[in-house]
Length: 483
Ligand SMILES: C[S@@+](CC[C@H](N)C(=O)[O-])C[C@H]1O[C@@H](n2cnc3c(N)ncnc32)[C@H](O)[C@@H]1O
Image (cartoon, rainbow, N blue to C red):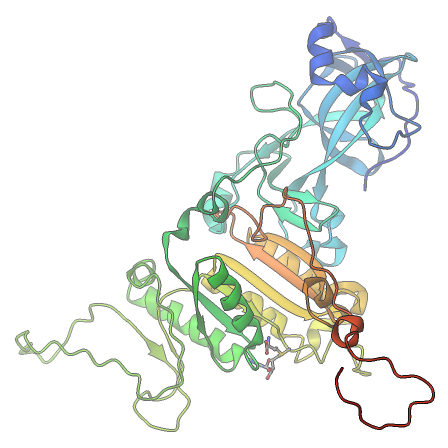
């Protein structure tokens, strides 16, 4: 975090210019700076600063000025931020309050995976702190752009700038998400505003515009016995959504199928039309009998013996009509991808883990396959589960790799740990989860984050056996009736 201790302004060329902001207005915007009872932090901090006046503009060098709302470079390590307050303190110090932007390497992605994210892309945080005015060294231009999973279209839309941002980053929750309205200190019209949490009024409003569909398709990669998709289907039905689960066998085969599918679509100029023709149908089956042979007998036969393909509905590996041969059929698109890629290469039970190059392990490579499939299908939501070692092994490289892949695809993303015991299960098992949501979806997790959180009471042994009669030291019976 770029936070640090406040020092005095030492550069005499640095000063506020122009009239102070009218007192009434300043007290309205920044009441905590004028009234000690309205402490900014719930627990009073030693260095809470109080103001005698706020300003609109400051001089940072001869003939070099910055305004409230400008973006600026800060002296040490080139931290970058947006100026949200200029004020003179009760003890005569000139202060700039800065809301920080995080570069990818400053987030959970960290240095080792930062190359996956465009170097000009930064994330607005809600971390703000007070700095001596002369720590601001130059004005820079950070523009806001819209996140877009179509990265080519996004690139075209970025105007010339030093940096650009399209998402916010929460340090506390390791979360990249859409920017709620009015979280950035100064809005586009130049007026300052405080953070206001976005409230979702209805389920439709919260879950996004596409929820009119009553059925949502789910692709469970690495499905094993299918527990993950079964759980998701249960959860979805509680919310009145019908999740249609789809399974398949080898993820890497499925990925090559997708690549072939794309080539075929490009060759026959079908990109864009194929998916929209079958928006809610993704079928992956290994049933050799499930081969559509729709022959329209009513048309006259082409005398040349050539047929025109109207649209491709399936492609498959293997011969679809030969029994006992594996055939993967695919058509349409998918709303949700979930999966728990194999974890033997990560688990601390494995004594020959490849710590130096974690992705150079056959099992761990499945993380790449998983993310490549997400990149191809661009589902609305992604959920990946793994052992907690994903976040520990090799300094958490693999977990950070996975989150940076999602972020680089312009998905909102959150990485964290959930403990089964906190959700009503009588066990302590903890698992790492990675959530992703397209920027068109309202949230990365399926609830309103501003609502108070209430976890279930933990189940303990007492809940299971406390109704049994107690056994004393002199008990001689092997069995007793239940009393
Ligand atoms: C950690 S388990 C996932 C369990 C699953 N989420 C569930 O709810 O049962 C990993 C699963 O991936 C399967 N698997 C391993 N390699 C695979 C591959 N290349 N493609 C698809 N599945 C694979 C394993 O058979 C195993 O069932």
